[in-house]
Length: 264
Image: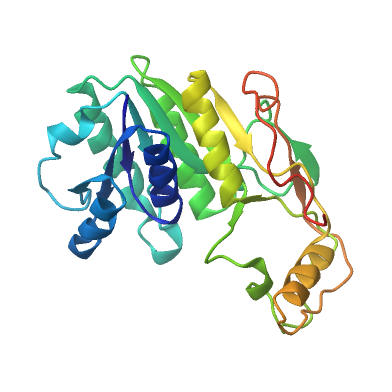
């Protein structure tokens, strides 16, 4: 089996390394020439692919059994409007290749904080620029009937290099301290992705979020304490919130979270 990973960033590179360890041939892309050696040293077949450039996408990269698309929309930096056109270029390249299985990385940010529990059956109502762009990207791939696309909506990402103890360390009067967190550790991001590939679970939308949702103040104070950082101070109030759950994980996708309780 050969898997292409478009975007070997924080998640994509970790997934690529895990798949290589599984004995899978992995092709990985980066926009940075200096990162080619990093990919090659990890046993990944490296490619430079810059979707912003008007260059032809290399057909050999798309010669794979599964394509994982893990490129962020960068909506906060003002590049959100370019995201869907970039993905259209990817789709055009896919249609000229043998790829018919895709994993598209999205986010639970497609759900607004409407004071309720949401799952994959809940219609997204994105109210942020990033959430709106990601939902447009999801819809673009859902319209591609020739492809079997599984969309993974990750919760907030934490893990190596993303220590949650640093997020609010030392800050004061942080609002909405009683709102539940919706997070996932990198280990489970990789675990769910591997399970999708191994179990051939394509054609689904999957919420990937640890099924433990303590209040922000409890979670982030504990994280700062464990990192020996100044404790944050939250306002003990509950304003806008959501709890992200899944109707797919544990049913169509058989997977047990490696971290299922943030306090254990």
